Length: 295
Image (cartoon, rainbow, N blue to C red; front, side, top):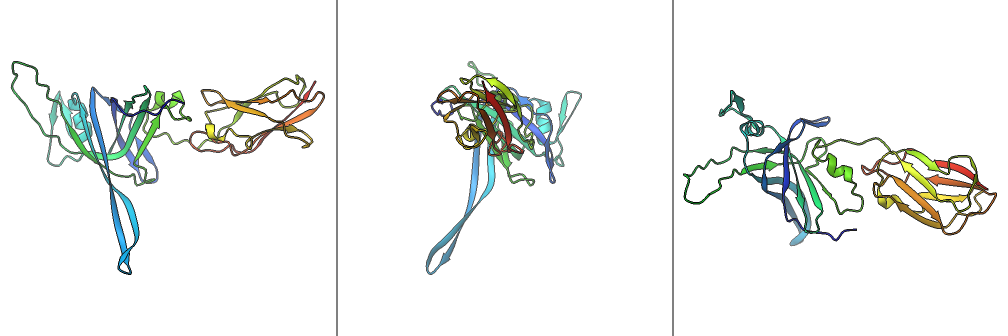
């Protein structure tokens, strides 16, 4: 595992218009804003204290608004119109007092001091019209960049307000970063399945020095790869096989290596339980049971 790092950079700033937040949640395809410079996220918590018997007896806290500031190199007219509810016609942006900024999601990634990235999406917020400042050209360059200020809140559908992924987390797989900006939220409700087991079910003349492998349809949590979920035992239940478990970098193949050779001419049973879950928390639909016989 990599040493945890701290944020030292900002890259790939995206927004996505929210199109639904009631019985479900949906967003338009994310759009990249050129040249991310800074992003500041400031959640606020509202806390109340109940007093009884002349002293504080209980406290309760709730998430309030989340203040967000983003500072890109520039914001195109089309992006301004999308973020603030204006219109662009013939290369000209038209702004009306009746324009209403839509709810949007904001995503970006930040490199950390250990060389790994942190990926972020803020789910629901509105931006306000930015200040405009123009300055005459001087003898030395004086960069003028826009700052967008917005207020973000939790979603109505599920109360979620943010998601974060770290490359140095043990359950991180490359596909998370690859797909981070293709969509804001892709709800995964499909349970994982086992596509291949080696030795195959009812295999015979299996070498006593064999290892057992299970290949999954998608990445699973590393934390569920434990002896209670991956069992190898004699088919008659008389003895469980001692050994070690490992998982590949893609989190899709689990290997069981027996501590010593299996017994010859013996039937064994492998069991993978419903304690196994994918990265979204979906459990294996049912226990997977296979048998094989050694040579």
